[in-house]
Amino acid sequence: MFNVRQKFEDQWRRAKQHLMLVLLCAGVVWGVFIIDWAIPDSLLDLRQWGIRARTWSGIASIAVAPFIHVNLWHLMTNTLPFVTLGWITVMSGRPLFLKVCLVGGLSSGLGAWCFGQVGPPHEGASGVVFGLLGFLLTRGWFARRLAWTLTSMGVGLFYFGTVVRLLRADDGISWSSHFWGFAGGAALAWRLYGRQSAAAVTKRDTKV
Image (cartoon, rainbow, N blue to C red; front, side, top):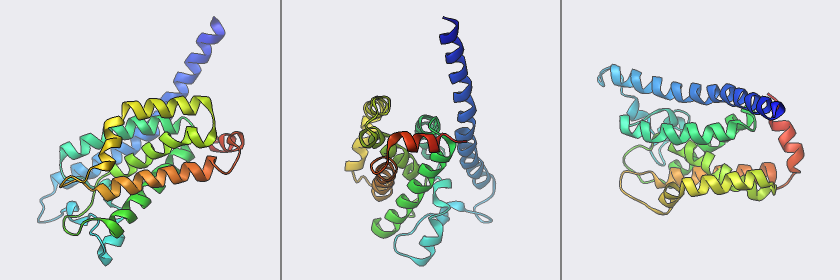
């Protein structure tokens, strides 16, 4: 009984330590939003730095678009799933979490630039969120590991409505960044776990 309790406490302590990295990333995004909100638009309007499809300036915006949000509601709707999915991912290793975020951000940004609608800029962390979602939903399948498969099923059921959004092209929603973020996360899962032994990759990713 003591061993079970001690193991649970150790796991919970480790989970809290890993959560700090996810909260730090979310805090940076919130910090950018507060700065943009506090400074008059005449001096600084970060919302104009979003990705504009098929423009030269839009290419440079791929790196900053995930940090920019239109309003508080936009930011809040991205924060909760980012923290939730990010926490699940970071439990397999901090390097892995950062890699998934990077790939999701790049794939969603490039997808929005290449295939997005011309007009309003594409911005927000939703592409990164969908990258995490795509990674977690497919990792269990590629790795053939029961724990990860059950996690994938749980994530899929909990975020079923979010997955359905991939099939919608509502006005004001960057469908292309969502789709390509999801595709980037799924492609990374295949690259890491579909072509190598799951044991070897797990050992590498959990090195902190």
